[in-house]
Image (cartoon, rainbow, N blue to C red; front, side, top):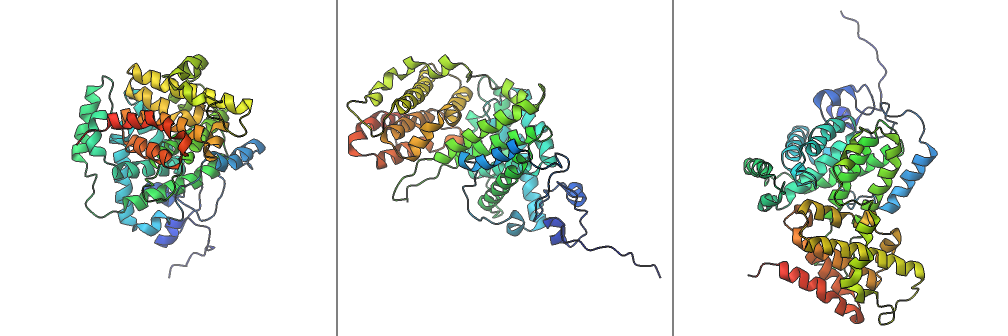
Length: 428
């Protein structure tokens, strides 16, 4: 009789191995079983990623990690449950293959610099391969893919890969025609999106506390994907009694900028981060005059009439914040009048949270009328690129929502953004 091999039973295996009742070798960040099957590996407890850093978090990284919640890197969903509890193993495997394929063949064409082949390679090759090593990146990829499937994406193929890249447009149109976005199987894509997004944010926070050269690129790409989704998650609050401005989107964008600043010193010149930044040169956000030219404020100068429209606690710093933010918003209007390429307009609109003073976000949170009106003007411009799935309905929701909470003495200031969205809305 063959002797039975004794082994010590472990209770620290990953969740997937526990569910399958198989032995887990407990390797981090991914055990051998999960690596073999190419599926995300999740542990109920946290252990440092051995491939990244086995050292305790540095003081600077701990400070960065603790600062992230206030910057917006928090989930918009509460307790959606783990994906392993929503789907059976076989169903989840098929879903994740579909989501990954959808991300590679379609979603990446919707990113601002998708007209550059190497930029797309950074997402379809570099990001995907890095995602197999860093679960938070893979979960962010799956989350944005599920969110895109939930959007009305088939109606907007003409917007994808614009700017003289007709071949790319045709390729995406073909991919969409072959993809069953509606699924037809009753898969809970909304539940999948919530679960993947929550997991990505939780894992990302853990990775930030161990930020190092080996995970800097993955942390950066995950942050970008999370910020892209935070814009699309601006809620439809038509059934809510009081409108709440989408502060989380601005905070998430500010968090991305903070993470970029922290990771740049860690990576070489040929890193993924450096390559991403090389393909996002339009507009040049480092050009102070191009971004914040005081002349751009002129069409909206009435918003800064301190005498006619006074504001409590309006000190010199607050005035400067309003002037700087309005100059940036005026620059977006100037670019729109000059018929700037859609991919560049997208960057201008989404970069408000990155470039606007942090104090401006505080003023929005306080619901200062002047801050709200400036924000309404900014997102009214997104009506011009509403074909892009990130901006579906955003201009209407924000402009109408802000109008609903403004005091009577500031209603005049909404005439321009309201006319902007009415002119761009097709008449029935």
